[in-house]
Image (cartoon, rainbow, N blue to C red):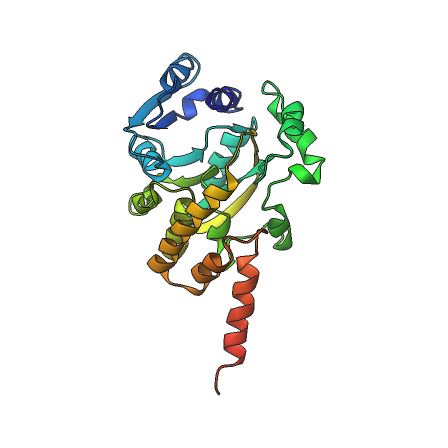
Length: 282
């Protein structure tokens, strides 16, 4: 999957001299470095490694941040295939914004279960990602799993009470200067989930606008998942998250984390806050 992601970076519409690629390895024991090195002639690429002390995606991403030299940090999980204009879209977004903002990229094909994996693999052509995206866009089942909520808010999430709900580390960008004091909390290391929501919450509280960059399109290449174990780990991380920030929205997030559906925390927050205002004594 790493090779697929790196291949998609070789196909970007902007000059390879405009961006660096940092592969941040979380203690893997496979041939990750060899795969990285195989792209050294076609990408400005660097490999960084941290010892294997368990599952530590937040620390691995921080390691990538610390070893980066660009003005924009674009986080891309291994297995995310970027559309050909994706890097250019993120660069243009940060050039055009008048205030500090973070951009959430769009991800086709992400699913919590694996029942569509084989069908997805039949549609995805690693050598023709843009046409694969076009094909996936025709089937509602393959739209970004957050699409229903994005559409509800007319694809403008930046003014919602909890835009960090959609802040997933798989595909997003932020100015590096905004990560000097706000990075991934290492207390989530060892368990799956929520470390990216935590960073989004930090940025939101600091006044950074969290926006959907719908035109920055990508594909999540299917791979096996262990849903139940991950959700239980995520729930434990969510307990820490709620204790850390202790807000209405983090409590709602905790209350609904183990639900079978992607509950709209923003809608619930708006309703509860309106209820509190309307019931306040005169």
